[in-house]
View 1 (cartoon, rainbow, N blue to C red):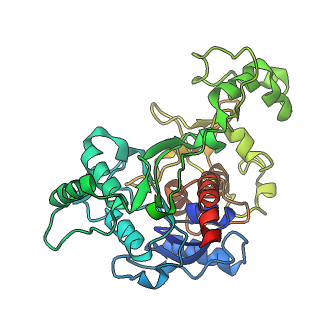
View 2: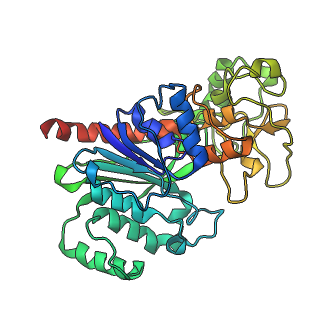
View 3: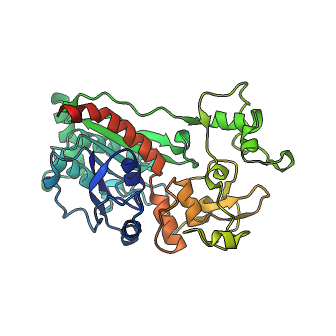
Length: 389
């Protein structure tokens, strides 16, 4: 199956779609470091991106995509999120970095069978409801672009009038806020997804159900104790249950879902770069970064919980979310390799740039395995229509 990856970043969403069976016809990304990351992994023939075309580095706005019309199964991407980020200035449609109109344009020009677009949790804030609805309507009716000189509010009104009397070009589910931890990602990361299918395909689809749960982690740690046994942690060395678990009652039996994955689960097999530097030296992107310290509101991620959300930040990388708290209470920064594990990138995938630059790329990425699960579900839905075409 064929795809186009927009706003590719370090490649998380695209790699996940690739694992679900999609091969990209085009990769677009404006950031030089992200493109360097993709190109370096192509040079190293890393399987995740070996079949990808050379990334198109630059602004998406002057690029034309009509040549791909009729040959694209899926368009994916994460339009720049600064306009909606909780750490940004919240300007939304007034922000020149809002590239949602470009995502809609690519859908209009290529007419894919489906699309997957991702954005930050901040887009779900009540103050953004009108513009969120505007995005949704544009994706339903991509064939109705803004007219010259028309502002977004007048365009929205025109789309609303059109929508009342015309069927949508794309059936687009209401945007869904997903917690990556509920899908096996070792990180409590909430992101918004817009997923739609071309209406003429008649596809009925819903978001995959969560596969992992907090209750199951609680059971494995404080009920059955399987978690500690699996990691060969002696009873006297077992950390107290994570703070976010203590208000909850221990389940009386094993829940159906699998346990949330923790930082310890994710980093299993990696040597501590501070305490075992010689072993860590041979692992790409696994270099100790000094200077971590805790203070109120800046406490890091405990080893036996899913990590806090890795962040890119508008003023550099905030260290609190990017620090590991060991079971003995000591802390250090996550290495780039460890952060890539928390985002479920493959171990042979190298991230280019300094520690802060690499962490920015990872903080902006979609977890690979979350992307794979969503793309695989979409692939299963469109497969019968591809065969019939």
